[in-house]
Length: 93
Image (tube, rainbow, N blue to C red; front, side):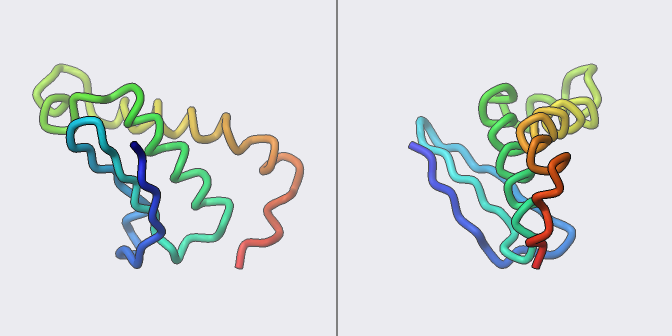
């Protein structure tokens, strides 16, 4: 089960995900423009799908956390690229 919420988060925090057992929650900053909310959703979905062991595990590996963030960003860009390249982001609020 996945719960998606738009919350009042600090401006420097675009989103985050939480997992407990087979339940997950993605929190997205409600102050982001719609395009960046979608970007954040796909970024956090990537982490849920491919980085299931969590930050505590990955911070103890030889892989820098920035690599995992870069992978999630690439996934999110691929998901929103048609909207971005088509100029459909005029509704930025």
